[in-house]
Image (tube, rainbow, N blue to C red; front, side, top):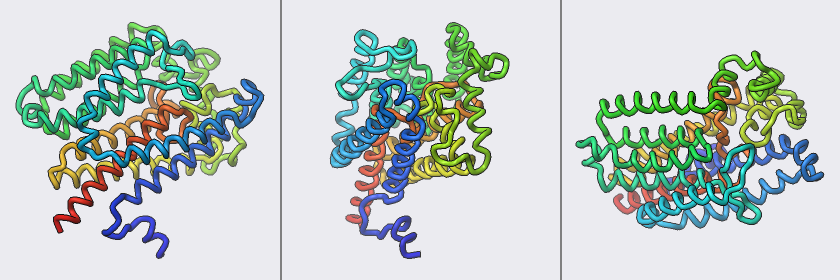
Length: 381
């Protein structure tokens, strides 16, 4: 009981949220284990070294923790001041990747920077949410009172979306759109504006789907993957087989068959399918509960910040919470056949340096937001 209280009921003098620390570290550790298990066959084939991707993920993890530690030392006022420069850097990177980027599976999404391939879309997500949080602080009344104030951040989103669709990266656009809308809703924008935006967004999504044959194939294969199990529906059918083999308790860690190069992208976008096969429904449920506990903490921190009139921290915490929740839902939903595949990582679990660095930085920002809230409340009392 004492250990339980120490982990989940921090003393009032503690100036950071232990829930977030332990949940994040737990997810990172699970991610490293699952990447190690899922990547052994493909690592052996590509580089004749079974732990190639596992070692790289471990290096990324250490680097992400160092980067997060540095980010946590930066005051929120500095992050607010840096939001516009970071957005401009993100736009530059999104343009650069279209010119000198590295193509994988027909998508131009990566910039080669030595030992890491940087994915500018991940940087753009955090930069956009920082910018919108700062904008909502500066123009809070304008967003609530005028359609023009509501529209201005969407113009920035549209510019980023155009650059992302040129890669193409439809999944990141959807995540940014939903998170931006959520932040504007929290800011108190009018409901009729959301109605217009929702119908416009749905119409645009439909248009984007029908204008690209590969997106049409994704939708049709999602609706009935067994119609073409060796063609457009291959990845989803293999993923569903992994879920089916996992049953309640799984086949045991390391005992997945689908990861033996039957399931493409087993250690990246579809790592949750390998997790389901090896650890079963129970394992997937535990991971999702950990992700959404982290999301709940982010929303709780945001709510407390609003109560203390710390608007930037409040908007940013809500944005990070919505981002993590929606991206996790899309990733697991795509692997389970609930929605079309989008090429999004599962937070902290999927292989990838860019995602791990940016999401670790987002968690560091949550800790910083909570730290400044606790610091102010301790001074008030």
